[in-house]
Length: 450
Image (cartoon, rainbow, N blue to C red; front, top):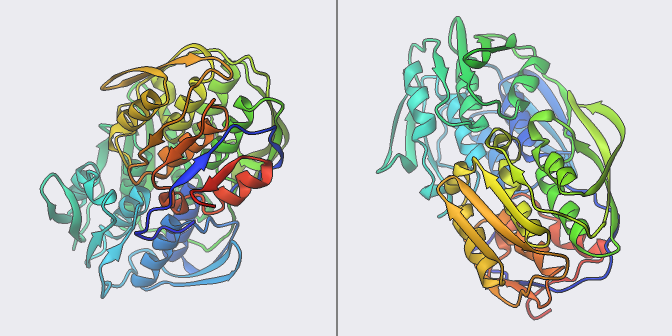
C-alpha cells in the first residue's frame, strides 16, 4: 500500500477460515521511542524489528534533521548514531510528521529544552489534531510554541534557553503527553515529575531506564508518580522491537469472527499497559492462548494463539481500561457487531481527537453496514447481530484514518455482503504489509478492480 495522495479503494468479502502465522510488524510506539532515544544517546544504537511504516519513517527522517545519523541496514535493522542529550542541532527544514500524532508530540518534547527552533507540520489529518495538550506543559520548561488557531499545526517550537524542571499532572490520560514531558525533562536540571491519575502505556519509562536514565514510578493517592532525574548521559542500546498488539488486533479479531479460523501471532507485546483488548476479548468468550512467555527489548512478549468459537457476547469495558486499548476500540467495535448483545465502550473520549473522530467514524460506518449504534461524548455502544448477522454491503469512509480502514476491512470478512473502504492508503502509516499478510491468512481482501 502507498500513503500517496491517490486513494486506494479496497473491498473485503465473506471469507473461508483464516489460518497460519500472522507476523505483524514491530510495535509503533516502541519504534518511535527507539529512534528518538537513540538520537539522544552518545554512540550507536542498533534496532531490530523496527516498524517501517510511514509514521516511523517520518520520525527517522526527523532525527536526521536534528543531527543524528540514521541508517537502514536491512528489513527492520537500523542504526542511530546519536548526538547526546541537549545535542540536537537546529533543523534547516520543516519537520513533516505525516500522519503521526505520536511522532510529532514526542519529537516536540525531545527538542523543547534545547535552545533551537523547529517548525512542524503533517498531513491534513494531523494538522487538525490539537497540540495544546503538549505545548502547554512544555511551556512550563520555558519553551514557546506558535501555531494555527486552536493550537494546531503547522507550528514552530522554540526550545527553552534555560530550562527548569517541572511537576505536571496529566489532564487527559495520554502516553504521548507523558512521554513528551519526560523527554523534555532529560535536558532540564534536577527532577521532572509527571503524575498520571490513570495509568497509560509505559514504554517511555521502560526504555529510558534501558538507556541509562534514572526513572522511578510510585503509585500514590494522586495516581502514578513518575520521577526523572535530568541531564543524564544516555548509553546506546541494542533494541529488539516486539510485535505491535495494536496491529495484531486486526488479524486476531478477524480470526474471531470468521468461522473455522485458527491463527498464531508470534512475539506479540504483553505489556500490561497495552493489554486491554485481550482482556476484553477473553471476557467476550474468545479463545485466546498465550504461549512461550519471554522478554525482548525490556518488554514482555508471548506467542498468541487464536481460535474461532462463534460464541462471542457483548460486554461493557470500564473507563479505567480505556487507556490500555485506546487504539484498539475501532476494531473492537467491528468485532462487537458480530457478537450477541450490546458492547458498551466507556471512557473513550480520547477517540474524538485521533487521526479522525473515531467514535463518529465507526458509528456512521457501522450504521451504513446495518448495525445499530449509540454514541455519546465519552461512550460508544454497538448492538451486536451475532455471527453472520451483519448485512454489510456499504461503502465506508476511512477519513484518512488507518485504523478505521482496517477495522471495516476486517468486518467485511464476516458480513453477508462485501464492504468497500473508500481509501485504504493510510494503512501504510502503521501496517504496510496488512494487505499481503491478511491475504496470506486467507482473507478475501482486494483492491477495487483487482
